[in-house]
Length: 230
Image (cartoon, helix red, strand yellow):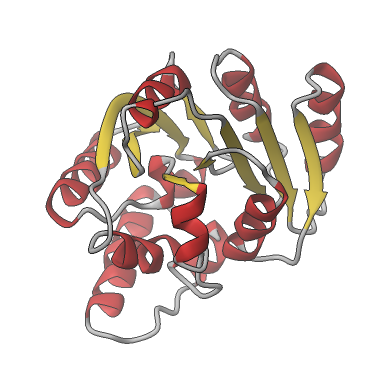
């Protein structure tokens, strides 16, 4: 099988603090051909930072879309021409050789999956939450966005992209798990935990669990925490 091209789609909204580390981690990677930074109407210096990185690497582009992570990721996917789409949150940085490993697996036929996530900086509760995220994927084959979800373009388009509603990552994962074999790759990605610390780690973890419980019982998740992190 020929070597697939990889596009990295980064939805961003007021991420001036975290975006530089995310983009620095991307520029150290081999194997990607396109990077789409999709701004959802930031009121800080996110776009200025993104444009500075565009000047450093012509593979990067900055576009705008209506606010909402699903809408932003779908907009980036529509602009891309690559074989594989990697959706990387603006506050999540790639670990060493993440994209080289993805490229190898995609060349062998892997069509969808995610990476192993860790929160940085951590702490006991966030280490536990990371373990739960990774263990949950092993059981359910549904990835969270923090795990840097990837999928072949044709499969993504056939499934209609991300549903433009809360918990878009889970909704798409529910469609994928009955459609294709997925895998969690061992390179770690590191999600900035500052939003957890700003809200109070215990409170934020409780909010995550409450949102998941609401979703499991079939109710539309409603939470100020959900608004903040989305």
